[in-house]
Length: 152
Image 1: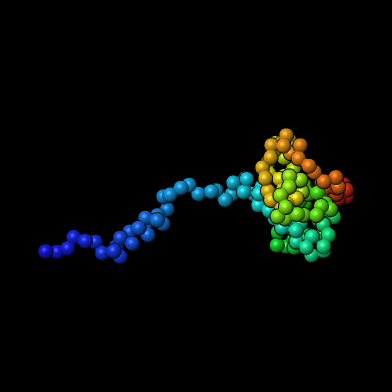
Image 2: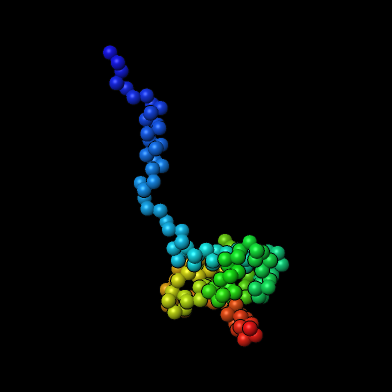
């Protein structure tokens, strides 16, 4: 009498095929969603800021102090275009949780959105939370970009 058992190799193959079938499983994150761009540009600004601080042993005072702009083009472009506003002269404190703002998307004061904190983490804030959050007193990239905009 022939066996009605299915070889275990067939079961494993069927399970693997089912696991990789497109369209099955939980929905995947959309990589081009606006919040991914917002967080990505702020993450790159964090990398730019921290690498400049580590290389020069002092916080950047302008975009010219960023030493690895070629590696973090998205962050550099976001600052140059005014999409991200950065506070200059702030010592980053990775690993030391804080609510002090280091950089933010330009429309956050009016609409809310993502900010980069001094500890180099990103966080979503409402416009009211942003207004209440501690901020450095020094100049920002928006302050230093104004004279350059007038020159062009």
